[in-house]
Image (cartoon, rainbow, N blue to C red):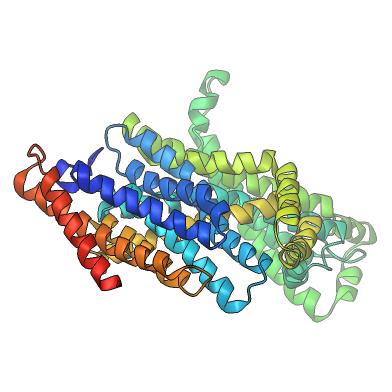
Length: 488
């Protein structure tokens, strides 16, 4: 992939003006005559953002910068896609439309968006299979930091709810209570040796793996004299391994006793003081929280060491290229954490003031309990994951259309723009739109397709230097004339 497409991949200036002009003006007229005029800025921005994602994904001169910028465009593109479809539905509902009218409005809006994307990509040929595949991969890698942050936040929320005893009333809390409660909210007044020992074994193994991944010998070499550091580290690792095996064995043994003959046997076997100590130790939520903290910290350290090791084996340019989408996803996750509460409040206020009453009431009824139970941060993180999935799915469909040869790879942007304009015109016919405007839209879609295809073929045959304006205008005029006769 190149930074910019070759001359043969684009269109001559005249064909470019015809394709961009018709793909931009005719959908705008359809939007204004169907009550969707307020969505025009969002449609234009989303089409440009989607096209920009493909262009930046194939930017080779500054690959790391291009991938970082492309990853940062993933979320705005998804917001635009949802805003266009959701805004069209809201406008139709607010105008008193029912099911067919709402569907027609949404399809007109999406057709206009597809036409805007075609207008942004067709003139310069930035929509191709390689760029689409690279953009899909970038969207997927951008989701990784957000997924990790959402998982940690969600797990911490469940631990907090279980420890506080107020999570059983939530659907997710009730579903996961059989797993979470024995770990973080043990029943007081009895032993929990089995669960405690098995949890301790997992934490010990994670801690040992994290500790052994660190360069302990090098770090301690300057602070010790005449000490076999390598032997000491190896002995410590062996001791932790033996401790984890012993914890598993004791846990399995206690599992059979605790679930079988009950607490009476344990109370009769152990001395009173030791039994009370065992009850306090194995049933303490604070100890469980400490073990959970050690487990999370060990996993983070192990991942950090792995990343450093990978970085040491890679060149600076390759490392920056690989890490760019992860940096973009991390920036998005940090931003959501920092502005979670005010951003969510602003979004809910916007929905309540701008959306129709039924839509606003449904959103409020769905979101408010989630925020109250799990916090604004986890709600926004999950929403961010859904947004990234929307962009990834949209770009994946663009890539799939090329792989399956549903679109002609010679200039798919032209075909996408013409198809979007055609679809918007067809569905606008089911709404309160004049017949002549629908016919103009249909003829315009044919002109976009024909002018784009002819212009690209002409440039490939005569080269980018030759003067072809008169030939292009003559051909486009003939297409308009034939289309006008057919419309009559």
